[in-house]
Amino acid sequence: MITIEWLYVIAGLLAGAMATWALTALFYHKGYSKKSRELLEKKQKSDEEARVIVGQAVKEGEDRKREILLTVKEEVHKAKLELERDVRERRHDLTRERQRIDQKETVLDRRAQSLEDREQNFKDKEAELQTKEYELAEIDARKRVELERIAGLTVQDAREIVLDAAENEYRYDLSLLYKRMEDEAKASAAAKARDIVVTTIQRYASDYVSEATVSVVTLPNEEMKGRIIGREGRNIRTIEQLTGVDLIIDDTPEAVILSSFDPIRREIARISIEKLVQDGRIHPTRIEEMVRKASMEVENSIREAGEQVVFDTNVTGIPQEIVHMLGRLKYRTSYGQNVLQHAVEVSRIAGMLAAELDLDVNAAKKAGLLHDLGKAVDFEMDGSHVQLGGEIARRYKLDPVTINSIESHHGDVEPETPIASLVSAADAISAARPGARRENIETYIKRIEKLEEIAQSIPGVEKTYAVQAGREIRVIVEPDSVSDEEMPLLVREICKKIEQELNFPGQIKVNMIRESRYSDFAK
Image (cartoon, rainbow, N blue to C red; front, side, top):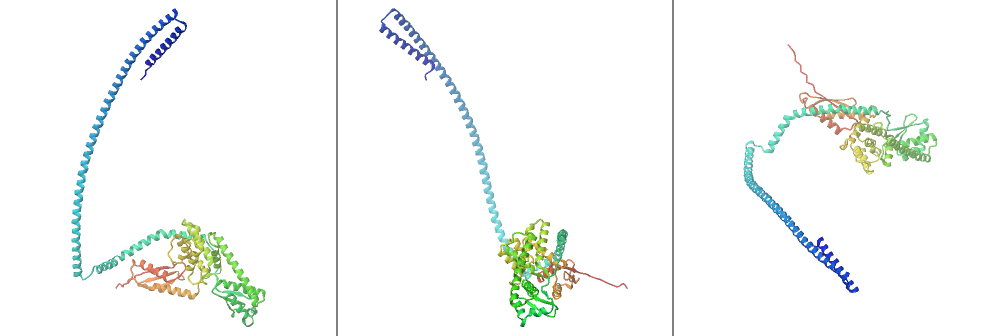
C-alpha cells in the first residue's frame, strides 16, 4: 500500500531528475562555465539532501507500518478472544437446553407408557363389561320368559295393562292440568283479544241493507203483464231465452217476479224489463235490443264497482281480471248480505286488527278483500267458493299469504300466517254482527236441531238446549256420570264435533252445567 511519505519521496526524485536533465542540457548548449559548475554543485548537494530525506521517510514509513501491524494484531487477538468466549457460552447454553429436552422426553415417555397401560386396562375392563352385558342379557331373557310363563301374559299385554291403568289413574290429573292451562290462557289472552276486537268493531261501523235473492219488477198496471207475455207467450219466451231467467207472473198485483240462480242474469233481466215497460214497445226485436243494452250496462257497472272498492280500500297489486271478478260480487248475496260490501268490511276490519298487532296492514286488507273471490264464479263452476277462490288466486299468481287466507278462512286448511287468522276473525265479525245476515225459518230450525243433536250424542249428556238463535247451546250433564274435572274435556269434544259437522257464521258458545242436589228429612 503506497503511503503519503512514499508519494513525497517519489515527487522529490522526479524533481531532482528534471533539474539534472535541465542543467546537463544547458551545459551542452552553452559550455561549461563557472556559474554552471556552481549550479551543478548545488544540484549535487540538493540530491544528497533529497536522498537523506528519502531515507528518513522510508525509515519513518517502516516504523509506521510496524506500529499499524502491531495494532491490527492486538485487535485481532481481542476479537478472537471474544469470539471464543461467545462460543463457549453458546455451547454451554446448548448443553443445558439439550439436558432440558432430554428430561422432557423422559417425562413424555413415562406418560406415554402410563397412557398405554391405562388404555390396556380400559380395553380389558370393556371386554369384561361386554361379557357381563351378554350374561345379563341372557339372564334378563330367561327371567322375561319365566315371568311370562308364570303370569300368563306377554310383555306387550302387560304394557297395555299398565298404560290403561295409568290413563285411568291420571285422567283426573290431566283434567285439572287442562283446566288450569285453559284458565291461565283465558286470563292472559281474553282481555287483550276482547279489547282489540271491540276497538276494531267500534272504529268500523256501517249500515246493513238486506238483499233478497229474488228480483221484483214493479209494473204501472195489470195490462202490462199481458204485453210482457205477448201473443201466444212469444215475448215472455224471448225474455227467458235471452236472459236465462224464469219470469213468474202470478196474482201479485202490478209486479213480475224474476227467479234465477245467477244474480247477474237476474239483474240484466230486471233492467231489460224496466226499460221495456218505460218504452212501451214490447216485441222480440225490441226485447233483444234492450237485453243487449242491459248487458252492457251491467258489465260497466261490474267494472266500476270493482275499481271503486279497490280505490276505497286502497289495496294495490291486484290484476285487472280479479278487479273485474270483485265487481261481480256486487250482485252476489249470502244470507241476504251483499258479498261485495262484506268483502270491503272484512278488508277494513282485517287491516285494523293488523294495525293493532303491528302486522302488515296492506297484506291484511288485500287478503280480506279477496277472501270470498270464489263466490264470483261459484254458481257457474263446480266446487266450493273456497276452492274456486284458491284456484283463481294461483292462476293469477297472487302472493302465498293471500292464497292461504282465501283457503283457510272457513277452516278448510290450516292458517299458515297470522294474517290468515286475522282474515278468518274479520270474516266472522262481519258475518255475525246483528242485522248482517238472515236465513229462512226452515234452515234455522234444521240448524238448531242439528246443534242439539250433536251435543246430545256425547256420553253423559242429559239434556241440551240451543238458545240465542243458535249462538249458544246449554248442555246439562248427569252428575253421577261426569265429574267437574271431566267437564272441560267434554266441552272441547262438543266444540270439535260442532266445528266438523256444522257450517255457521261467527261462533257458538257451549255452556255445560252439572248440578248435584241432596235432600233429607228430619224426623
